Length: 67
Image (tube, rainbow, N blue to C red):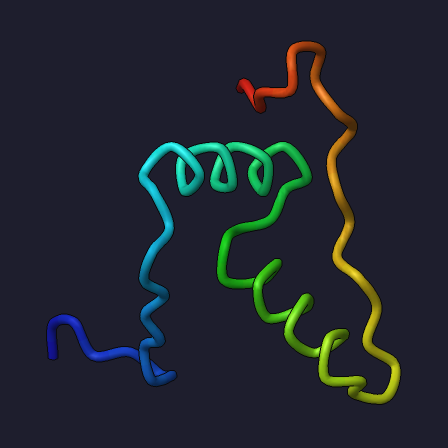
């Protein structure tokens, strides 16, 4: 079946397109993706045992993530 996902999709509102683009770029720089980094952050935030903050890429001069 097309468009059938293993996990229920979650939607976040109020995030502008530029932030999404920068986040996608940053996650690719560490070899990850938006879903994985978000899940790691949520697990750390609620205090799941063994959860750690996700890796964060080094800052880029000018404050913008670029590929």
